Image 1 (cartoon, one colour):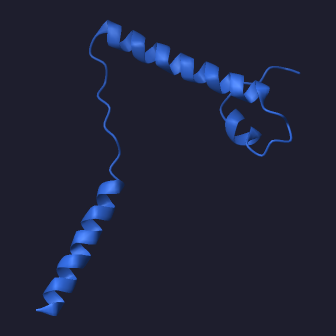
Image 2 (cartoon, one colour):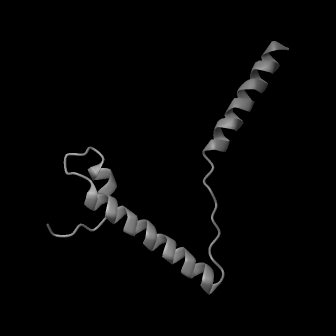
Length: 75
């Protein structure tokens, strides 16, 4: 009986842990307006990353992370 409870508990923990690893599904846009909104959101996010990269001091430990994938201006 106790083995069954332990096994059931382990299976429950495993199922709960695997649920955390499920990626979020975002459906593809289906209309022109949805595509435009998606593209505008991507552009806003990139502009914000560029801004954060530009204003972050060179000695800040987050500089590399903030500037990853951002095209930097020639200083």
